[in-house]
Structure formats: C-alpha cells, structure tokens
Image 1 (tube, helix red, strand yellow):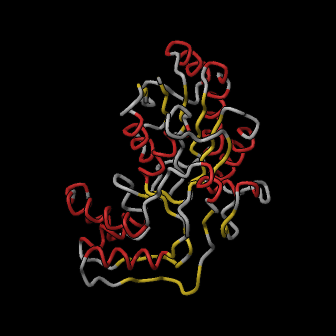
Image 2 (image 1 turned 180 degrees about the horizontal axis):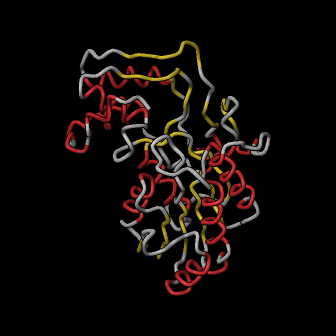
Length: 296
C-alpha cells in the first residue's frame, strides 16, 4: 500500500513510519512540504499522490515544553478536517487519538469506548480528540486508536515520566513525581503494531473499523514504575513524591482491542522499562543532563 503518515517527525509518528516502511510505501511529508492546516494544499497533495490509506498522527503539542500552546483546538481540528474533506480519495483512515477524549479532569478508571461523551473535555487537546472521535464514529472504514500513556526511545525525556526517570537514574539523580496515580502505558512500538493491523491488509489478522482503547491488560502505579527503573538501573537512587495521596486515575479498558486482535501482544511495563533504561544507557549522548535538574 501507499500510505500517508502525518506527524511522521514526532515521537509516535517516527515509530509508525519505521514499522510501516517494512511492508509499505510510506509518505511522511514534513510541515515545510505540507501544511496540514491548509485545506487546499492537502487536497492538491492527495490528488497528486493517490495514497490508498492515511494514518493521522499529527497533533499540535500542548505539553509543558511546547513553545506555543495557543489555538491548539483549532489547529488540531483544522488538520483533521483538511484530511477528512478529501475522504473520498483514499480507503482506510487510521487516526491516533487519545484517552484524553474521555475528559482528564475526572478519574478515568478502566473507562470503556462506549463511555465517550459522558463528559465533554474542557482542555483543548482532549476536546479536539473528542470531536474527532465523534466524527469518526460515523465512518465505516476508519479506525480510531485511543492510547493513554505512550513511552519508548526518542520521547521527550525532560517531561515524559518513564524516560525522565530512566535518565535521572542513569545520572544518579533522585527520581521525582508530583503525585502517585494509576496510569496506563503502552510501548510505542506496540502502538505502531496496532496501527499496522488497523490498516486492514494483513493476511494473518486485521483490526475492524471502530474505536479502540490501546492499553495493556492492567494499569500501573507511577510509584511502581519508578521502582522498576531503580531495579533496572541497579543503583540506589531515591524516589521523591512531592504530594501525598493518589492523583486521578488515567487508564482505559483494553478488552475490546484484545478481543478483536488476539494476535497483538503488548510488552509489559516491567519489560519496557528495562528495555528503555538499556536504550538510554547505550545512547547517553542524546541526554542533556542539565535538563534533568528542572522538574517540569
């Protein structure tokens, strides 16, 4: 297949491109080559390239290190609807959504796909993903994936908890977290594998159209993750929790995905943490240790 992957230079997008490039022709234009908020440019590009499927992973970042978080909802939805406007020019549409579509200002404790809309998200990122989810529900050739936490090599270690903890342990610094909470993490390459199944062309097994939480079998506490990092490092680094008590749960029920895709086997967090620590140990040159002294 010839596939357009948007957001191919981002953390998740890079892994999706690497995975799909093994078996497909992948086109992943940078923002300089295709402005996804320009509807006419998107239409012209798709008319010229004749792609068979689109994987939409592009998103305007709203995290603590983002240079610009203004107009986040508008920018995300403009990108989405620019592609949707050309829906008739390609087949399978795979969208990397987010558990934030359920609303992050309440506990999400094993939330199911059919609970979308119980709360309308008030944050810009969650609201944009909520709108996308509502629109895609009416598309019988679209797959919407809702991961909660995604981790792996190449993420922003200055703000992403597991990578930050690995880098701090590697440097012999205390591992810090604001508050313990139950969280759902998926290894980024496992998410990329689900995207490949979602394209619907695998001979062994494909993922039917619909919305799916992309979560492992069980959530994990952040404090447990920190302890896994300490174990992987073999060092005696302290773990510092700023606030007592538990924060809001943030994990989904992944039963629908596992039932539809029994061939998918997610890496356990324990295995993933060990793999990620080894990766950072082998790539210490990518880490600016000065950035680890600032808790964001």
